[in-house]
Length: 225
Image (cartoon, rainbow, N blue to C red; front, side, top):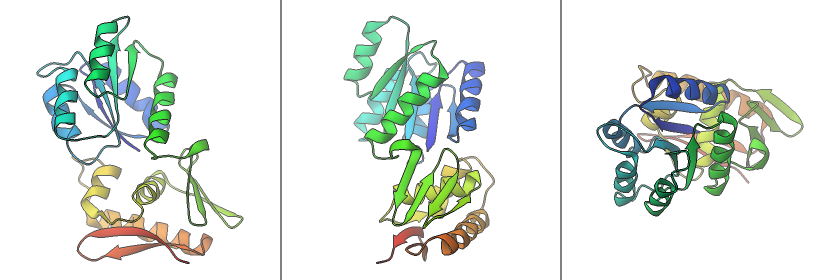
């Protein structure tokens, strides 16, 4: 799952991002409302964590602009402790959830899991099921037909992305942005290598699931009868 965290307290942002990454989330940071809005309006992120108090453009304004552009991805709004008015304004503006600062990272991760389930991004017990395979994106384990592989983080993120978007092709550029970040130096060849590794493991463990190359577009996961 790819997360955008918009927070102007840089030390706090980096500390929280580090915890999230240790739990196998991909995280990009923005430190002001204007850059946060630019990133949030892309199709890269699954969930946005958005502080209200931001320079250049406050979090409520970012949220309203997102909803005005029909961007429906879930947003967790970070509010000042005890500020009921901020919570009400945030929910009225289209926030899916809110969290009062300071917060425990365990609570934040619980909110992320809940939003993921609500949007059908994840399944219960940290497991995605497709065809005859089961992916535990927390432990990075792939199960099928009584066998299992321990995947690399990139392989797990790639398979998660393909399963979540089952039925439609995912472009190579989207895969790069999701797995490596929008400002990375990764190229098409990096994606091709990860696809090759994942295909090899799927061919060994699964009787039904394959990754198809859609020429000129990208890749799609398919389940055979």
